[in-house]
Length: 154
Image (cartoon, rainbow, N blue to C red; front, side, top):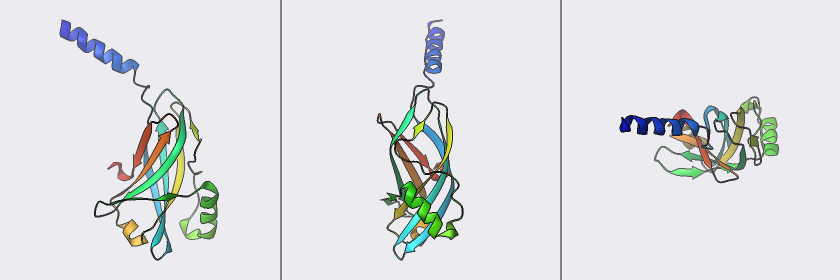
């Protein structure tokens, strides 16, 4: 009987705290690549995410990294919203800019779902970027919580 009551107490505690973990969950919907120089490329990532917690998530920092075929991790230089608009204007091969860029100070309400975009420049040829294992978006909240959205969920 004691084990049953302890199990019930643990289940109730977990149920009551289900929305207290501040984390964004989502997936990368589309990746577009562009070679801008012989040894530099741009990756444009369209992604969807949800703030599954009961608390406001305010973006402090957005970072994008790539894991190449050999397992090396390379950090990309995130492109601002203004520069992303110019990028789509100057390079029509990228297609349409579907979503706004996820920028610092974006406020994501509890239980809110959003579609956003982030573009990053990598100092590698496009072919190396095409042969990657995965891309990862790292989003940090102003209070320190970190969420990662990984390409292919890998």
